[in-house]
Image (cartoon, rainbow, N blue to C red; front, side):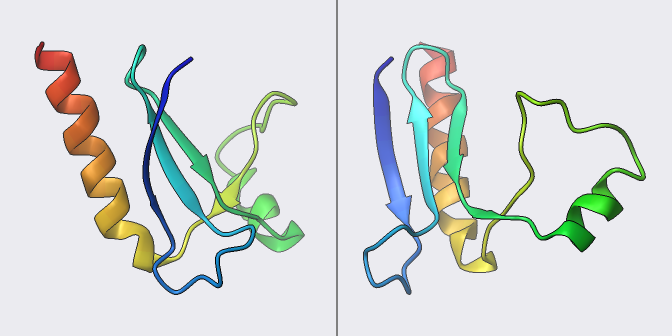
Length: 80
């Protein structure tokens, strides 16, 4: 796997913060975020299950630019 670092939360102190990468082989997004609290998970479960291989994470709206950049990187790679 070759991960292309996109960005960390711009308001972070640099430790354990939300981060976005793009897997350059698959164009998948890799997202590090805060674990969702129980109330958020319960609400998500109203629309379906959360398999053991998946997680609900929360990202700050400050990460919008990073997600857009990841979309552009994945889209550009898919066109090659």
